[in-house]
Image (cartoon, rainbow, N blue to C red; front, side):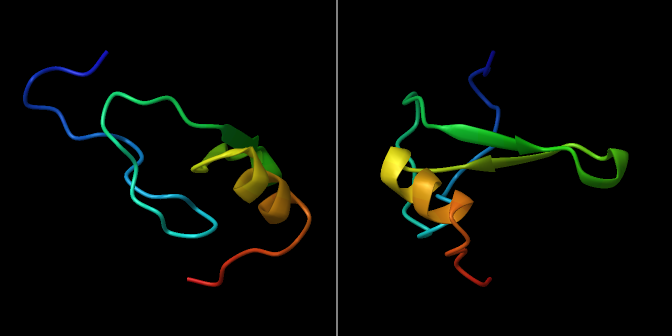
Length: 59
């Protein structure tokens, strides 16, 4: 749970870099490669679907 002085874990979409609105839920994908867990957040399901399809925005 976020406190008053905390920083959001996700701030932008991992596909299109759209900024997130505080307090709003967004789709998240987990990746378990090499024993490490990585989390990717997306502004909506279409960005998540494009990212999962291989159209990753190089950053």
